[in-house]
Image (cartoon, rainbow, N blue to C red):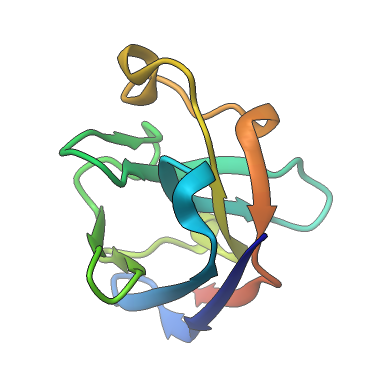
Length: 129
């Protein structure tokens, strides 16, 4: 079993920055990536960014490329999401996620929710215009 605990988030004006952190505990042998999803009111949960925990492979949604950066500290079992140049449409609940993908080739090109096996409780991000 893997447990994820997010921290960070909050409120900021458009153009500002926020950082999210996610701590991992439990048996991480069965996961090979960690990442972040978000969900705005009335919208489906969408993948934002993910990182292969055993190598340097990352995925970013087109909407956040160049503004968000995912990073990890394997020794501390932490994953981070630095969000810069925030826009009101970035608002929502951000969920830390972890899972196993059988194909590292697609890890950098997509982020299907079906591959998520573990979820954090979510943290709110509000960006005002």
